[in-house]
Amino acid sequence: MKSIRTEILIDAPKENVWRILTDFQKYPEWNPFIRSFKGGIEEGGRFAVSIQQPGKKPMTFKPRCLVLRKDEEFRWLGHLFIKGLFDGEHIFRLEETPEGKTNLIHCENFSGILVPLLWKQLDTATRAGFEEMNKALKTRAEAELAEVA
Image (cartoon, rainbow, N blue to C red; front, side, top):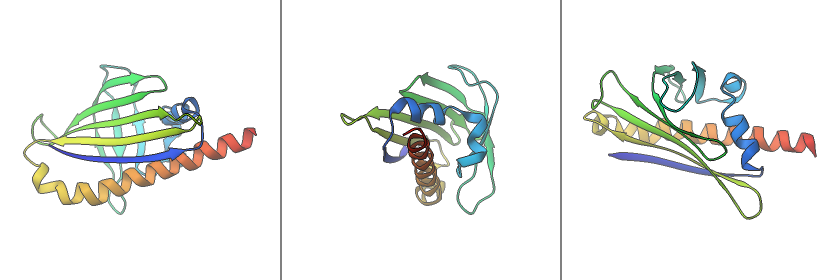
């Protein structure tokens, strides 16, 4: 198994960050990495997600939602074609700091026989996509908070 883990500190309450993170219809407005969600997102349910790594064409997956805990965690598991070939458990976790800010942990655990062949791309292009999304979410959440103040 291989993992990518990124984090970013967002100067906004986790409820605000969660609202943006789970407003899937608005992803095309701000999210450079996850371009769209289609279908209802609920624990155990399937949906379609289109992901675009920097400089690459979009890819669509149909993962299953594993966890959807309000203001805390959103997690899904997707497979490339069949289980065991290339599987990815994608995780968004929100942690509140004592100052009322939000630490976003954005990670993915990869498993399957193709992972060693794809690891270099995952650790570069996919990681870059995670970081771009994290920065865009931070910008959006902090801008919304500034508008209210």
